[in-house]
Length: 308
Image (cartoon, rainbow, N blue to C red; front, side):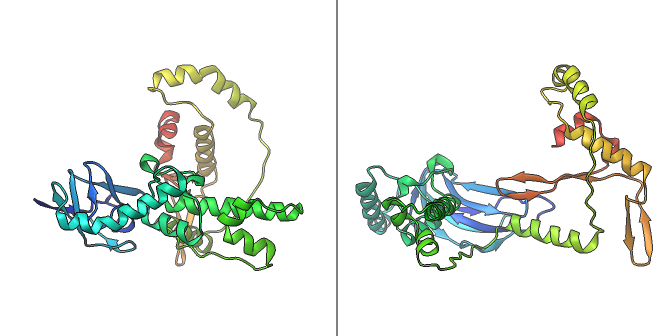
């Protein structure tokens, strides 16, 4: 029985997404709940899994394609693999056997990661995997290359020759350290990083940028936090009392005291806002994001801590 694999319903504020990585190819046999494809949006990474045991019959959207909610991604055939599928899968089986002979163990990896590993003559077992079920992702390979390049450059500065493993595993390090070449690698930005870059650029062109440094005695705040943190956590179902809520509340009071700071320009008019929306930059593994607390002036310390 054929089943249509469709994109999940995207959040209301997300118009579309991009096919990031297919973990299975046409004709591959998969098991129930096995990861098929990653869909990347401006805000989150969505995973689509197999609905049942069967075979991925056809792929309708390739990596890099833009999709919308409930758009057809692939056709899935429930049940055992057909004879044709088994014949088509035979070369892949041989390739997996070769990897096993070289490394001693079978290593799972995404197609993009496999391509990078082959292009750079890397050993899969030397790469730290962060993907589901120990799968090596494209990001894992890129991080491995960056680390190897940094170690090679450090060894060159100390007049130490890199180990044979470094020579075999990092063409980037070799070209940069020994041939004097200015090695470069171009990697397309993810949708999240592209959106962050767009928003930051817009902020620099539409706002008056100001950086100020002031020393503040935090001892009273630290005393309050130490005195009430256990009671606070117990009362608010495990929410811990940190410093962020104090910083946000202090910013809100400052905006109330100086309303001109909480204003924007629209054409020839100045708009003074009677509300306080606070954004705090947060570093995440996928890039810098700035979540915004709407109407933060009406939020308690517990509500602020839960949001962050």
